[in-house]
Amino acid sequence: MSRPEEIARQVEAAQPGWLVLWGQYSQCFWAIPGPHYRRLDSGIITASNPADLQRRMAYIDANPNPAAPPSVPHRHHHGRATGRSDHP
Image (cartoon, rainbow, N blue to C red):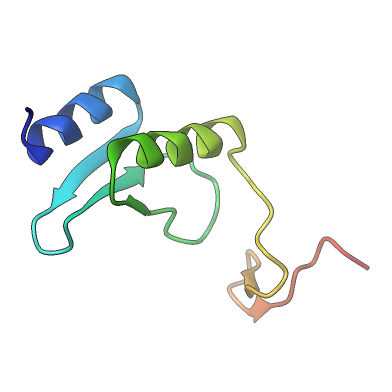
């Protein structure tokens, strides 16, 4: 069986544009998107297993600018936190 660090390297190799790490303390896999991620939030993904991590990474790759949930403040280009601006 592969060690978590090896699995993280394998996931990273299979998902170009992402940095994938194993958190020794958190016991989770972490994925940090590269410059293709166009949101102002961190974009960091965490999962307890590689399958969930890859599923979430694939979602971000397919939807590079997914809508934020309505309850989460959205930052505009001028840096002020406001509600979602895409609804009247």
